Image (cartoon, rainbow, N blue to C red; front, side, top):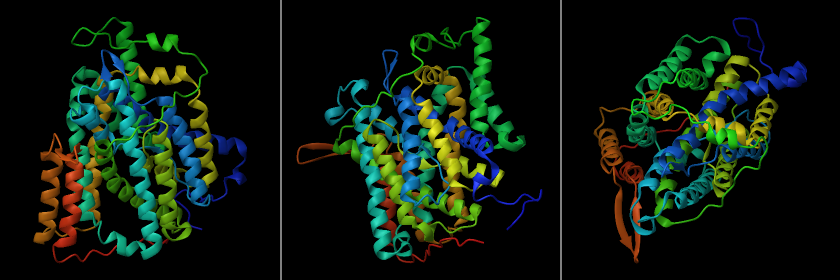
Length: 452
């Protein structure tokens, strides 16, 4: 076995540590995913706001299906892969687009009725994972990935982050001081944090800036526009125990075409995460239990969550960071974190405390998160050594970026009397895949990383 600098050996069966330590390790994994996971429903609440009432995703439902999705993923991957599935930020652009659509059935539709259609699009996006899994199982992963090289997926991921940037600025502008506090705390813990604090900078940014907001609110300080920094009315009215407010999704072709193409980016993210976890643990999970099995787990978990009004799921890099820190690679610890998330989903008062977070703090945190999404796309291109001295690669990346950012209102057309809107990201994905398939010189070879 390999040892770290402190002589610590990796642990593949956490039962040897005893139940109390296993419980604490599970809590650590839950806190690692918590800040980012609950931020997704909070952000959608900002998009689906009408007359001061939020109709976004439920924090309770989000936590419930993060836990259930993780357990289902472990079942599909034969209980071998130590991965946690939390809320995906990649679909935020789609949520925002559907909130602002004014064509077809969405013309004049109130915010209270829009979210189920967004979730219906995510159900279909999750099912695309199953299609890719079937293709990989049938023809092999190397042949499939030839059509989805980093020169296509990288720029698409970059566009996802950049299209969300205006939302971060808009939220932060409600109180720039709190936004900068949140951003500064995240940077400090991410760069200079030690131990567990280094892997939960987002959570620390939320907690500390919320504490500052609470102090300011107590002192009578208000936002620049005169509004109260915090509002605890919903917290006081919430009960301690209650069922998550699940809501069945609805389907519309425009919403599907908004959400489904985003699966292209999240599936690539999934493959990258599986490679990272394999390298961390020292086992090739792409080969055993197999990439097709992990894709099935992730896809069905996403569709199941969206079916009942939850966000898309994705494997979390935050929890991979916990694996690196603790060197405890037992998937049982991850499943404990999943159970904790399920328990918290039945505590409405806890969910309302989280929902009371000021928009300015969300904006400050989003500065980092949205930028990181784009940075991941850049990293994808750099680490894959995409050669931009080749004209074909420049053309593909250029067209994707212009389509993704230029079609800010989407591309609307009518088919058989039905109004269909393709978002900029959907147009970018289609253009990139087609150009990569048509232009000569595609020499990309997918390398599934072997264990050390």
